[in-house]
Image 1 (cartoon, protein in one colour):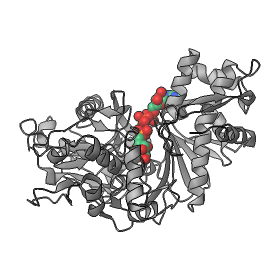
Image 2 (image 1 turned 180 degrees about the vertical axis):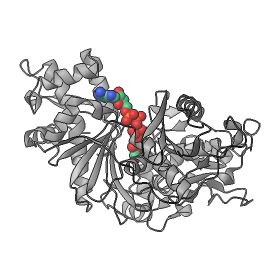
Image 3 (image 1 turned 30 degrees about the horizontal axis):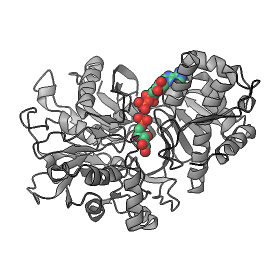
Image 4 (image 1 turned 60 degrees about the horizontal axis):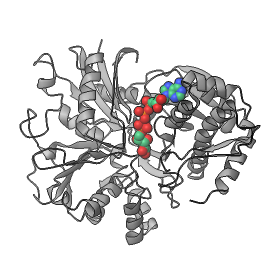
Length: 492
Ligand SMILES: Nc1ncnc2c1ncn2[C@@H]1O[C@H](COP(=O)(O)OP(=O)(O)O)[C@@H](O)[C@H]1O
Ligand SMILES: O=C(CO)[C@@H](O)[C@H](O)COP(=O)(O)O
């Protein structure tokens, strides 16, 4: 039996699955928590990866290949000695909103969308790089490489890392990434499949070059990871991380977490995935690159050689935890309360911009409840309004994905908050499409395992994906109508 390991180094935790390549069955799992916050020392991700791998025996003597998918866009700055220069800024850190506006002012939205497939927003690596140029000029001269979370973890697992703290040392030209995560940097062009190095230079004010193994390169140029194809091997896990030195575990190039989920679900044309993790995302696999001139849909690449038009919100699962916390209940308690209220929550609306928002682009916005009266201000209505508000933002995202040319057959609902039965009920009422709930699982980590098996065998595995439930659409237009009118009453 050949086993492969898939990793999801996500915002809140690191999840590991060990999968039997013959059947797709998960034989072992592991998990470790990440720190809170939007600025994190990557070392914490490395330690969580090692802990979760140990729990799952993910580097066990029976494992042949491994791949790491991870939260997208996070900016990991490395010095020439391989050390991390400052805490990584995550995708949900909005401090670079002004830098995004500056870039649009300098180059124009149309030019940026044409060059990168996406409008720059605070989430993307490139705007964070620009923020560093302006806010932390002392850091800039020391930057020798810019990597993303999954690139950096793969590099560490291969044995590279800071001088003196890793077996192979700081060989920055060994940094690799994949198309899906490169497309979230805002300095890589999904249509040409190449970095836009002139754009990177405009962002940081320093020249850049793509990593090339064995290349001494221009010592002044900042290294960006080499972009590998979907099934290209990224080397092997270093023996220092293995119990037996004669063992060989092949590494896949890894992926952004949403592209990983698409692989794990075996998403095909007509499948639109709605992921309810820390972020809310709506995305689909597409044959052609998407460049949405309005900037709503990000024209990412996927992890199979195709494309992944995607809309992301900053406010998803944590909206529910926050409101549950205020109401003094746990997840099940929130579901029970929400189910006690009817569609539309008695008129109560939550605009859920607790963390600011990315889509729509309102980085400094805050959340607000609307239409509370003595009669409507019940715990049940507030619980239901939290779920409806979270999903209404994603229904708008679905509209944008459709407008970009995706024709959905149904929605596949995944991510932590999908475990909530009330979320499943309300989803069938908010979206005007059938909703499929895949069997509970870590689909991003499974996608990484698909990639590992693909790299190992040279062919993409077709593992079955079990369905927990198919729900017919029970569309209640009132929910989105009252959400729209609450939104229209706000000025940001
Ligand atoms: N039954 C539930 N109801 C609502 N939210 C849940 C439930 N179970 C887990 N979650 C939430 O899901 C989130 C974790 O989901 P996950 O997809 O792993 O996120 P991420 O990939 O962003 O780390 C947490 O915020 C957690 O509170
Ligand atoms: O920014 C995006 C996608 O563009 C997010 O989807 C991140 O990739 C984080 O994902 P989760 O950890 O919330 O799953």
